[in-house]
Image (cartoon, rainbow, N blue to C red):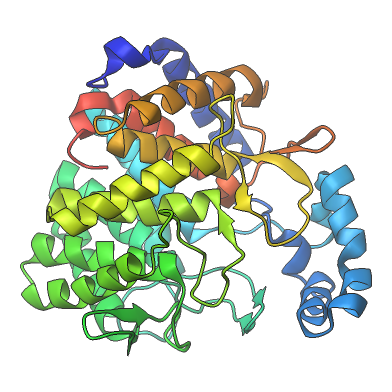
Length: 409
Protein backbone atom coordinates (compact mmCIF):
# COMPACT_ATOMS: atom_id res chain seq x y z
CA UNK A 1 0.00 0.00 0.00
CA UNK A 2 0.94 3.66 0.23
CA UNK A 3 4.31 4.73 1.63
CA UNK A 4 2.55 7.03 4.05
CA UNK A 5 -0.26 4.64 4.97
CA UNK A 6 0.58 4.84 8.64
CA UNK A 7 -0.30 8.53 8.69
CA UNK A 8 -3.05 8.58 6.04
CA UNK A 9 -5.01 5.50 7.19
CA UNK A 10 -6.64 4.85 3.81
CA UNK A 11 -9.57 2.37 4.10
CA UNK A 12 -8.12 -0.08 1.59
CA UNK A 13 -10.68 -2.87 2.10
CA UNK A 14 -13.58 -0.49 1.48
CA UNK A 15 -11.90 0.89 -1.63
CA UNK A 16 -11.33 -2.60 -3.03
CA UNK A 17 -14.96 -3.53 -2.35
CA UNK A 18 -16.11 -0.36 -4.07
CA UNK A 19 -13.92 -1.09 -7.09
CA UNK A 20 -15.32 -4.60 -7.42
CA UNK A 21 -18.87 -3.22 -7.30
CA UNK A 22 -17.96 -0.54 -9.84
CA UNK A 23 -16.53 -3.14 -12.25
CA UNK A 24 -19.79 -5.11 -12.07
CA UNK A 25 -21.75 -1.90 -12.68
CA UNK A 26 -19.57 -1.07 -15.70
CA UNK A 27 -20.24 -4.49 -17.22
CA UNK A 28 -23.99 -3.99 -16.86
CA UNK A 29 -24.23 -0.31 -17.77
CA UNK A 30 -21.99 -0.48 -20.82
CA UNK A 31 -19.15 1.63 -22.14
CA UNK A 32 -21.15 4.52 -23.61
CA UNK A 33 -22.74 7.30 -21.62
CA UNK A 34 -24.14 10.78 -21.60
CA UNK A 35 -21.79 13.59 -20.70
CA UNK A 36 -21.38 16.98 -19.07
CA UNK A 37 -21.51 18.40 -22.63
CA UNK A 38 -24.60 16.45 -23.68
CA UNK A 39 -26.79 19.53 -23.29
CA UNK A 40 -24.66 21.50 -25.74
CA UNK A 41 -23.39 18.84 -28.15
CA UNK A 42 -26.62 18.33 -30.11
CA UNK A 43 -28.66 20.26 -32.69
CA UNK A 44 -30.45 22.33 -30.01
CA UNK A 45 -27.79 23.02 -27.41
CA UNK A 46 -24.90 23.59 -29.80
CA UNK A 47 -26.41 26.59 -31.61
CA UNK A 48 -27.72 27.97 -28.29
CA UNK A 49 -24.23 27.89 -26.77
CA UNK A 50 -22.70 29.44 -29.88
CA UNK A 51 -25.27 32.25 -29.67
CA UNK A 52 -24.34 32.78 -26.02
CA UNK A 53 -20.71 33.36 -26.99
CA UNK A 54 -21.64 35.70 -29.87
CA UNK A 55 -24.42 37.65 -28.15
CA UNK A 56 -24.36 36.96 -24.38
CA UNK A 57 -27.65 38.63 -23.42
CA UNK A 58 -29.68 36.93 -26.12
CA UNK A 59 -27.72 33.72 -25.67
CA UNK A 60 -28.57 33.61 -21.98
CA UNK A 61 -32.22 33.19 -22.92
CA UNK A 62 -31.32 30.38 -25.31
CA UNK A 63 -29.21 28.38 -22.85
CA UNK A 64 -31.31 29.09 -19.75
CA UNK A 65 -33.63 26.03 -20.14
CA UNK A 66 -30.60 23.74 -20.32
CA UNK A 67 -28.87 25.40 -17.38
CA UNK A 68 -32.02 25.06 -15.26
CA UNK A 69 -32.38 21.44 -16.36
CA UNK A 70 -28.78 20.72 -15.36
CA UNK A 71 -29.43 22.27 -11.96
CA UNK A 72 -32.87 20.78 -11.26
CA UNK A 73 -33.37 17.73 -13.48
CA UNK A 74 -29.98 16.58 -14.81
CA UNK A 75 -31.34 13.27 -16.09
CA UNK A 76 -33.12 15.31 -18.79
CA UNK A 77 -29.80 15.59 -20.65
CA UNK A 78 -30.80 12.36 -22.40
CA UNK A 79 -33.37 14.44 -24.32
CA UNK A 80 -30.60 16.50 -25.90
CA UNK A 81 -28.07 13.87 -27.00
CA UNK A 82 -27.46 10.14 -27.25
CA UNK A 83 -25.00 8.02 -25.31
CA UNK A 84 -21.57 7.88 -26.94
CA UNK A 85 -18.16 6.35 -26.35
CA UNK A 86 -15.37 8.60 -25.08
CA UNK A 87 -11.71 7.87 -25.90
CA UNK A 88 -10.54 9.73 -22.81
CA UNK A 89 -12.70 7.41 -20.68
CA UNK A 90 -11.43 4.30 -22.46
CA UNK A 91 -7.88 5.44 -21.73
CA UNK A 92 -8.60 5.86 -18.02
CA UNK A 93 -10.33 2.50 -17.79
CA UNK A 94 -7.40 0.85 -19.57
CA UNK A 95 -4.97 2.40 -17.09
CA UNK A 96 -7.07 1.42 -14.09
CA UNK A 97 -7.32 -2.21 -15.15
CA UNK A 98 -3.59 -2.26 -15.96
CA UNK A 99 -2.76 -1.07 -12.44
CA UNK A 100 -4.96 -3.76 -10.91
CA UNK A 101 -3.66 -6.44 -13.27
CA UNK A 102 -0.07 -5.91 -12.20
CA UNK A 103 -0.89 -5.46 -8.52
CA UNK A 104 -3.03 -8.60 -8.39
CA UNK A 105 -1.17 -10.66 -11.06
CA UNK A 106 -4.54 -11.23 -12.73
CA UNK A 107 -4.58 -11.97 -16.47
CA UNK A 108 -8.34 -11.40 -16.58
CA UNK A 109 -7.85 -7.80 -15.50
CA UNK A 110 -5.14 -7.41 -18.13
CA UNK A 111 -7.59 -8.66 -20.76
CA UNK A 112 -10.00 -5.92 -19.66
CA UNK A 113 -7.27 -3.30 -20.10
CA UNK A 114 -6.45 -4.66 -23.57
CA UNK A 115 -10.14 -4.52 -24.50
CA UNK A 116 -10.11 -0.75 -23.93
CA UNK A 117 -6.89 -0.33 -25.93
CA UNK A 118 -8.52 -2.14 -28.84
CA UNK A 119 -11.48 0.21 -28.58
CA UNK A 120 -9.04 3.12 -28.71
CA UNK A 121 -7.41 1.75 -31.84
CA UNK A 122 -10.83 1.88 -33.50
CA UNK A 123 -11.78 5.36 -32.26
CA UNK A 124 -8.65 7.25 -33.37
CA UNK A 125 -9.29 10.44 -35.36
CA UNK A 126 -9.75 9.64 -39.05
CA UNK A 127 -7.63 11.32 -41.69
CA UNK A 128 -4.38 11.52 -39.71
CA UNK A 129 -1.23 9.53 -40.41
CA UNK A 130 -0.38 9.24 -36.74
CA UNK A 131 -2.68 8.06 -33.95
CA UNK A 132 -4.60 10.78 -32.11
CA UNK A 133 -7.94 11.30 -30.40
CA UNK A 134 -10.49 14.01 -29.66
CA UNK A 135 -14.15 14.29 -28.69
CA UNK A 136 -16.99 12.28 -30.25
CA UNK A 137 -19.11 15.44 -30.54
CA UNK A 138 -18.88 18.98 -31.88
CA UNK A 139 -17.48 21.10 -29.06
CA UNK A 140 -18.74 24.68 -29.08
CA UNK A 141 -16.14 26.97 -27.50
CA UNK A 142 -15.63 30.70 -27.07
CA UNK A 143 -13.30 30.65 -30.07
CA UNK A 144 -15.52 28.60 -32.36
CA UNK A 145 -16.65 25.01 -32.81
CA UNK A 146 -14.12 22.18 -32.68
CA UNK A 147 -15.59 19.48 -34.85
CA UNK A 148 -16.01 15.84 -33.85
CA UNK A 149 -12.85 13.87 -34.56
CA UNK A 150 -10.47 16.83 -34.23
CA UNK A 151 -7.34 15.78 -32.28
CA UNK A 152 -6.99 17.33 -28.83
CA UNK A 153 -3.67 17.52 -27.00
CA UNK A 154 -5.66 17.28 -23.77
CA UNK A 155 -7.01 13.84 -24.73
CA UNK A 156 -4.20 12.15 -26.66
CA UNK A 157 -1.65 12.10 -23.78
CA UNK A 158 -4.01 9.97 -21.69
CA UNK A 159 -4.14 7.44 -24.52
CA UNK A 160 -0.34 7.42 -24.69
CA UNK A 161 -0.25 6.64 -20.96
CA UNK A 162 -2.82 3.87 -21.41
CA UNK A 163 -0.76 2.10 -24.08
CA UNK A 164 2.35 2.70 -21.98
CA UNK A 165 0.90 1.14 -18.83
CA UNK A 166 -0.29 -2.00 -20.61
CA UNK A 167 3.05 -2.26 -22.42
CA UNK A 168 4.73 -2.23 -19.00
CA UNK A 169 2.69 -5.28 -18.06
CA UNK A 170 2.90 -7.47 -21.18
CA UNK A 171 5.68 -5.94 -23.38
CA UNK A 172 3.54 -6.41 -26.48
CA UNK A 173 5.25 -4.52 -29.36
CA UNK A 174 1.79 -3.62 -30.69
CA UNK A 175 1.38 -1.15 -27.83
CA UNK A 176 4.86 0.30 -28.32
CA UNK A 177 4.09 0.94 -31.99
CA UNK A 178 1.04 2.90 -30.85
CA UNK A 179 3.22 4.91 -28.46
CA UNK A 180 5.60 5.76 -31.33
CA UNK A 181 2.71 6.90 -33.53
CA UNK A 182 1.11 9.01 -30.78
CA UNK A 183 4.39 10.73 -29.97
CA UNK A 184 4.92 11.61 -33.62
CA UNK A 185 1.46 13.15 -33.74
CA UNK A 186 2.17 15.24 -30.65
CA UNK A 187 5.51 16.40 -32.05
CA UNK A 188 4.50 17.01 -35.67
CA UNK A 189 0.75 17.69 -35.94
CA UNK A 190 0.43 19.85 -32.84
CA UNK A 191 2.02 23.23 -33.55
CA UNK A 192 4.41 25.42 -31.56
CA UNK A 193 4.25 29.21 -31.32
CA UNK A 194 7.11 31.20 -29.87
CA UNK A 195 6.23 32.89 -26.58
CA UNK A 196 9.66 34.00 -25.39
CA UNK A 197 13.30 33.25 -26.04
CA UNK A 198 13.05 29.96 -24.13
CA UNK A 199 9.34 29.11 -24.30
CA UNK A 200 6.70 28.13 -26.83
CA UNK A 201 2.99 27.61 -26.43
CA UNK A 202 1.51 24.63 -28.27
CA UNK A 203 -1.78 24.47 -30.10
CA UNK A 204 -4.78 22.75 -28.52
CA UNK A 205 -5.64 21.16 -31.87
CA UNK A 206 -3.59 21.10 -35.08
CA UNK A 207 -5.37 24.31 -36.13
CA UNK A 208 -5.31 26.95 -33.36
CA UNK A 209 -2.66 29.36 -32.13
CA UNK A 210 -2.16 28.07 -28.58
CA UNK A 211 -2.21 29.95 -25.29
CA UNK A 212 -3.96 27.35 -23.09
CA UNK A 213 -1.74 26.53 -20.12
CA UNK A 214 -2.79 22.94 -19.49
CA UNK A 215 -2.42 22.06 -23.19
CA UNK A 216 1.29 22.91 -23.10
CA UNK A 217 1.64 21.06 -19.79
CA UNK A 218 0.06 17.93 -21.29
CA UNK A 219 2.29 18.03 -24.36
CA UNK A 220 5.35 18.78 -22.25
CA UNK A 221 4.75 15.64 -20.24
CA UNK A 222 3.87 13.41 -23.19
CA UNK A 223 7.00 14.36 -25.14
CA UNK A 224 9.26 14.22 -22.07
CA UNK A 225 7.98 10.73 -21.36
CA UNK A 226 8.18 9.66 -25.01
CA UNK A 227 11.72 11.01 -25.34
CA UNK A 228 12.87 8.65 -22.59
CA UNK A 229 10.56 5.73 -23.49
CA UNK A 230 11.44 5.78 -27.18
CA UNK A 231 14.98 7.21 -27.08
CA UNK A 232 14.06 10.29 -29.14
CA UNK A 233 16.12 13.28 -27.91
CA UNK A 234 14.34 15.75 -30.21
CA UNK A 235 11.13 15.32 -28.23
CA UNK A 236 12.88 16.59 -25.12
CA UNK A 237 13.74 19.87 -26.83
CA UNK A 238 10.12 20.46 -27.87
CA UNK A 239 8.86 19.48 -24.44
CA UNK A 240 11.30 21.81 -22.71
CA UNK A 241 9.96 24.90 -24.48
CA UNK A 242 6.36 23.94 -23.65
CA UNK A 243 7.26 23.38 -20.00
CA UNK A 244 8.97 26.76 -19.92
CA UNK A 245 5.76 28.33 -21.23
CA UNK A 246 3.91 26.83 -18.28
CA UNK A 247 6.55 28.00 -15.82
CA UNK A 248 6.73 31.52 -17.26
CA UNK A 249 2.95 31.91 -16.94
CA UNK A 250 2.70 30.91 -13.30
CA UNK A 251 1.42 33.93 -11.36
CA UNK A 252 3.27 35.30 -8.33
CA UNK A 253 0.74 33.64 -6.00
CA UNK A 254 1.51 30.21 -7.51
CA UNK A 255 -1.64 29.88 -9.61
CA UNK A 256 -2.26 29.42 -13.32
CA UNK A 257 -5.20 30.83 -15.22
CA UNK A 258 -6.77 28.59 -17.81
CA UNK A 259 -5.16 30.52 -20.65
CA UNK A 260 -3.06 33.62 -21.15
CA UNK A 261 -6.17 35.52 -22.27
CA UNK A 262 -8.47 34.41 -19.39
CA UNK A 263 -7.10 36.01 -16.26
CA UNK A 264 -10.36 35.59 -14.34
CA UNK A 265 -10.60 31.78 -14.66
CA UNK A 266 -8.84 29.57 -12.09
CA UNK A 267 -10.46 26.23 -11.37
CA UNK A 268 -9.68 23.02 -9.55
CA UNK A 269 -9.16 20.26 -12.08
CA UNK A 270 -7.26 22.39 -14.62
CA UNK A 271 -4.91 23.43 -11.82
CA UNK A 272 -4.48 19.72 -11.02
CA UNK A 273 -3.75 18.98 -14.68
CA UNK A 274 -0.90 21.48 -14.70
CA UNK A 275 0.55 20.42 -11.36
CA UNK A 276 0.25 16.72 -12.27
CA UNK A 277 2.13 17.24 -15.52
CA UNK A 278 4.90 19.19 -13.80
CA UNK A 279 5.16 16.61 -11.02
CA UNK A 280 5.51 13.75 -13.51
CA UNK A 281 8.01 15.69 -15.59
CA UNK A 282 10.01 16.43 -12.43
CA UNK A 283 10.11 12.72 -11.58
CA UNK A 284 11.55 12.02 -15.02
CA UNK A 285 13.91 15.00 -15.31
CA UNK A 286 14.41 16.74 -11.94
CA UNK A 287 15.34 20.42 -11.95
CA UNK A 288 15.10 23.17 -9.35
CA UNK A 289 12.93 25.55 -11.39
CA UNK A 290 10.26 22.92 -11.84
CA UNK A 291 10.44 21.94 -8.18
CA UNK A 292 9.94 25.53 -7.06
CA UNK A 293 6.96 25.97 -9.40
CA UNK A 294 5.36 22.81 -8.02
CA UNK A 295 5.93 23.95 -4.43
CA UNK A 296 4.41 27.36 -5.10
CA UNK A 297 1.52 25.80 -7.02
CA UNK A 298 0.73 23.37 -4.22
CA UNK A 299 0.73 26.22 -1.68
CA UNK A 300 -1.81 28.10 -3.79
CA UNK A 301 -3.85 24.93 -4.33
CA UNK A 302 -4.13 24.14 -0.62
CA UNK A 303 -5.05 27.72 0.29
CA UNK A 304 -7.52 28.47 -2.50
CA UNK A 305 -8.88 25.24 -4.00
CA UNK A 306 -9.35 23.16 -0.84
CA UNK A 307 -12.02 24.24 1.65
CA UNK A 308 -12.04 24.23 5.44
CA UNK A 309 -13.21 20.58 5.41
CA UNK A 310 -10.26 19.46 3.30
CA UNK A 311 -12.44 18.98 0.21
CA UNK A 312 -12.04 20.30 -3.36
CA UNK A 313 -13.54 23.66 -4.31
CA UNK A 314 -14.52 23.91 -8.00
CA UNK A 315 -13.06 27.40 -8.43
CA UNK A 316 -10.88 29.89 -6.67
CA UNK A 317 -12.15 32.40 -9.22
CA UNK A 318 -15.27 31.34 -11.11
CA UNK A 319 -15.91 32.65 -14.65
CA UNK A 320 -19.69 32.63 -14.15
CA UNK A 321 -22.43 31.40 -11.88
CA UNK A 322 -22.31 27.65 -11.29
CA UNK A 323 -25.15 25.24 -10.53
CA UNK A 324 -23.15 22.81 -8.39
CA UNK A 325 -21.24 22.67 -5.11
CA UNK A 326 -18.79 19.88 -5.79
CA UNK A 327 -17.57 17.91 -8.78
CA UNK A 328 -16.54 14.24 -9.06
CA UNK A 329 -13.87 15.26 -11.56
CA UNK A 330 -12.28 17.50 -8.91
CA UNK A 331 -12.23 14.60 -6.45
CA UNK A 332 -10.55 12.29 -8.98
CA UNK A 333 -7.88 14.80 -9.94
CA UNK A 334 -7.33 15.76 -6.30
CA UNK A 335 -6.57 12.12 -5.47
CA UNK A 336 -4.17 11.92 -8.43
CA UNK A 337 -2.30 15.02 -7.32
CA UNK A 338 -2.13 13.89 -3.70
CA UNK A 339 -0.72 10.51 -4.73
CA UNK A 340 1.96 12.15 -6.86
CA UNK A 341 3.09 14.65 -4.23
CA UNK A 342 2.04 13.12 -0.91
CA UNK A 343 5.63 12.57 0.21
CA UNK A 344 6.50 16.24 -0.39
CA UNK A 345 3.46 17.81 1.29
CA UNK A 346 1.85 16.93 4.64
CA UNK A 347 -1.06 19.13 3.56
CA UNK A 348 -1.75 16.92 0.55
CA UNK A 349 -1.59 13.78 2.70
CA UNK A 350 -4.30 15.22 4.94
CA UNK A 351 -6.40 16.22 1.93
CA UNK A 352 -6.10 12.73 0.48
CA UNK A 353 -7.65 11.23 3.59
CA UNK A 354 -10.46 13.80 3.69
CA UNK A 355 -11.33 13.35 0.02
CA UNK A 356 -11.28 9.54 0.10
CA UNK A 357 -13.36 9.45 3.28
CA UNK A 358 -15.97 11.83 1.83
CA UNK A 359 -16.04 9.96 -1.48
CA UNK A 360 -16.72 6.63 0.23
CA UNK A 361 -19.26 8.17 2.59
CA UNK A 362 -21.38 10.27 0.22
CA UNK A 363 -20.60 9.63 -3.45
CA UNK A 364 -21.10 5.86 -3.86
CA UNK A 365 -24.43 4.78 -5.34
CA UNK A 366 -26.25 1.54 -4.62
CA UNK A 367 -25.62 0.22 -8.15
CA UNK A 368 -21.84 0.56 -7.77
CA UNK A 369 -21.38 3.75 -9.78
CA UNK A 370 -20.63 7.21 -8.44
CA UNK A 371 -22.56 10.45 -8.22
CA UNK A 372 -21.40 12.99 -10.81
CA UNK A 373 -22.01 16.28 -9.02
CA UNK A 374 -23.30 17.66 -5.77
CA UNK A 375 -25.73 20.33 -6.92
CA UNK A 376 -26.92 23.37 -5.03
CA UNK A 377 -30.00 21.25 -4.33
CA UNK A 378 -29.54 17.48 -4.43
CA UNK A 379 -27.27 15.46 -6.70
CA UNK A 380 -26.60 14.83 -10.37
CA UNK A 381 -26.67 11.03 -10.38
CA UNK A 382 -26.37 10.51 -14.14
CA UNK A 383 -23.25 8.31 -14.64
CA UNK A 384 -20.93 9.92 -17.18
CA UNK A 385 -17.81 7.98 -18.15
CA UNK A 386 -15.85 11.10 -19.10
CA UNK A 387 -17.20 13.19 -16.22
CA UNK A 388 -15.81 11.47 -14.23
CA UNK A 389 -16.55 7.79 -13.59
CA UNK A 390 -13.45 6.65 -15.50
CA UNK A 391 -11.13 9.19 -13.91
CA UNK A 392 -12.22 8.18 -10.43
CA UNK A 393 -11.92 4.49 -11.29
CA UNK A 394 -8.33 5.03 -12.40
CA UNK A 395 -7.55 7.09 -9.28
CA UNK A 396 -8.91 4.45 -6.93
CA UNK A 397 -7.14 1.66 -8.83
CA UNK A 398 -3.87 3.54 -8.48
CA UNK A 399 -4.58 4.12 -4.81
CA UNK A 400 -5.33 0.48 -4.08
CA UNK A 401 -2.47 -0.80 -6.28
CA UNK A 402 -0.15 1.02 -3.90
CA UNK A 403 3.58 0.50 -3.98
CA UNK A 404 3.49 -1.51 -7.23
CA UNK A 405 2.83 1.73 -9.08
CA UNK A 406 4.64 4.13 -6.79
CA UNK A 407 7.07 4.83 -9.64
CA UNK A 408 4.42 5.53 -12.29
CA UNK A 409 1.92 8.25 -11.44
